[in-house]
Length: 273
Length: 265
Image (tube, rainbow over all chains, first blue to last red):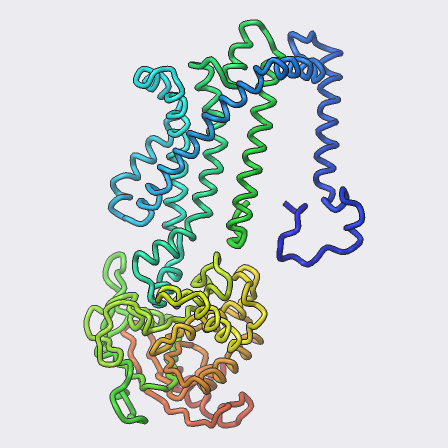
């Protein structure tokens, strides 16, 4: 992100300060122009070559979105998906980080558990959907469980790598500065592993978006995945596009929030992004 | 052979007795040290000088308590060394020993924080030691914002703030440019003259050893390294690189390190 000045860079030249828009730099401007261009091309192609049922343009989609917004349907689906993603993501991370720390610090735990982690990492959450629904029903529990599953392995493995890649000199320095094993864990291992754990969480967040859609397609009455899948019954392509649009938008938004947090808290590592 | 040339009365502060140590190799263990003896007196600046690959870092790891010898003992102040502790402060060659998530000041206060000192005490001690290595005004900088020389200064301040009985320095200026190295050497000599803290300094640089040390232990080429000879360095301080006596000593030590060759490497 070249657009924002890091707190430690030199003060910006006074010339740049005049217009508030220009102070942001060229990057957002290009992004906005590009997005407008995309919408124009989309509208042109849709209205000139296809019927709205086959390939709706942005104006048609916008109108449908407004209708769904007015009826409250759109908010309902967005809220349902976001709730599942965030709940599963946070519970999954809370479970995964301690396991990752344990695997990173204990050779025995690593030998015993790492093979399981590596194995299940390759089994997508959706493969578990049917047994999970049989065991836990078609309610929210199943969907949140699926998101937890998606989150856990990637966060465990990243945290583990974060711990085991701490340079030996850091723990040695801490030892000869008088730190006890517990103090080394608290004041060296934890902060040193934090960037990798956060990176794992960021990847897990992305995966959660994919998983929630699949889960909602198979067993749900709400959510963006349900919206997309249900719309196919009426060939409501415009509704499908709305679902797709909001998945992308919410994904960008959550990732942006997460990135800002990472940048705020671990900017001094010089390794993030 | 070497041992203490008893410059000061009383038992040496740091003693290694017949230390033997092997690297666990892939097929057979690699013998790094065999019957290695060392005695560092309280308050002296002792340099271990040897070619690369002579096991200097292995010696430091043993003295610091990061590794344990296969045979022999290491004692500090009459007590056997079994593990790393705050009585032996280590300055590492590379800056990955600093904590990048902490500011310079917090890095320097780390040991004090472990001891449970109050925030105010930590801050005043850390500031004083950062000032001693000419880093006043840089207290809130993070390692990623500092040059290599500044980071080594932080390492030195961090160890001094913790007030160990001895400083173990493993080629601390080996990874910085020549200009910075020269000023770091001068600063260290100056700090040592005021603090008179016992220092064991490891280097392969003859000039560095002459500039800093009271005594220089010449370490033989590995495997099975040991100290060949201990040279007294009585040159008056502050020492200048241009002093002709520095050059004479350089020649003498170079001949010891490279017997039979007249090269001026």
